[in-house]
Image (tube, rainbow, N blue to C red; front, side, top):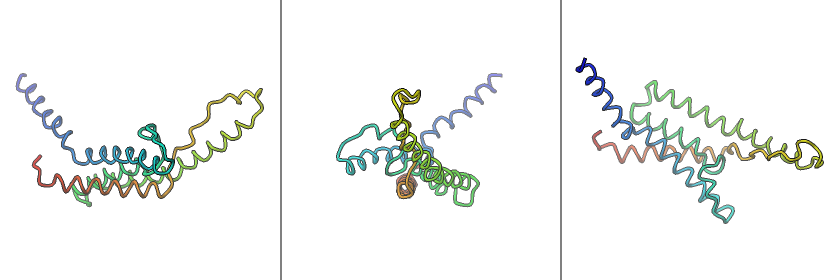
Length: 168
């Protein structure tokens, strides 16, 4: 019984240490973090004011969704090769996420703008006149998604080049 318990503990040991050396996971987290940080910079450049809310908010340049999924897909492709099932899954996931960011989410944001305008024009006595405004910045323009995807590729390739000779 003790040998079975110790065997189970030994099997978990590689999983614990590998999470912190998992190149695709690190690439995805770095892609997300860098993209979210760049939103603050691009917002300052465009609007001439610092907005820390951009660190956690949706929308903006570059798309952190695109950067995250492309970092993941490219890192998997570099690690396991482009012919594997994992790369195929990651690439399809990246495509769906980026399509959704420029399609459904962008249109939902535009609809929120129109609905907020309608609510603003309602008479004060209307039951919806005091409604909280809907969030308008939900999706991304195609340029924001392309910028995020390029950033994700660069992050994954750079991480791969920096870690390819490091033993794991």
